[in-house]
Length: 457
Image (cartoon, rainbow, N blue to C red; front, side, top):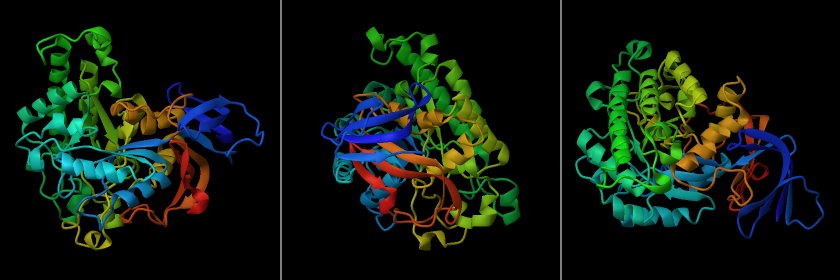
């Protein structure tokens, strides 16, 4: 048994934070007790969490570990190390590897490699064969082989009819379909917002309408699929028993019932589309990244390619819209979109360098600084966005502080100041390098085993 003493336990289910001790059963890998306990000398280890928050291990539904095929950027081992250092105990790898995860063989490779890391590495498979957007993969076979969900992240799906078929299958298989929403018809230079900064740089960029238009389309398709599922038309029979929902109760359904997840939302227009779709009853969730609720397009002038990502950093009005949507529940999830690239790639000219930044090791500190300190979210609410809701989206039993729940925990000091200088990721493409951050992970525990200790780094 492991005893964690003197910490404040953040419970994202009850939205409470209390001064409790926690006992972990190492053998069973579960939480064995939450309350007040004395160190009687019988515990295998005692962790003093004075001044720290004890919370469910973070869950990231959007990471790129670049394995197979692009391991000079990251591999499953280094990605998992970065995740553990950031407080993450579960991650979902995106499928745009080389080759892509559109077959069971590649999927099994990722899952088997992930099983050797110490954290829970899950994998999404592609929606379309070869990520070409023309033909659906064998979603049933991939789900049976362990696919956690489906996404062509990095490439938008332009065939609306194919998207609807994929949503229907995702609903049938009870897995989420995650969508990258950028219509290339509106984009001349990706990774940079179409606006004042792009004008200053002489670059057309990527306007918000590229995102807004696809989010609107897919929210309405999701609404149609949600209603079709409600009426029982998907398989010719109405749903019955505990799974059946009235239209009214369906509107209240959380991430655990979502069919569609809108990835890395960045614009206020897209936020409004999600808000409307939810109000109408669509089974849809949305995720936001720390860089999108922390930075604006002006960061491109300061950090160059380290501030280039898809969708791009947008205006202060967009950033504030994301924060408001996180506060009111329109955005359910914080995900990093951890996207490693080599220094050589990021050294290319702005219009030629790849988009994306790493994020696993700075996400918690940025969320504490930008969301909790100003009072937009409480600590338990933040844990809901970073652990409970992501877990529910993928139908997992983690993300909870409850006896019998998986012993996946993060212990962090919300007040500790540190500088982001060294990363466990293989790459270091981040605009936050060298910046002083507040809130530091002290321990990450997965399955009752310590997989990261800050004193060891």
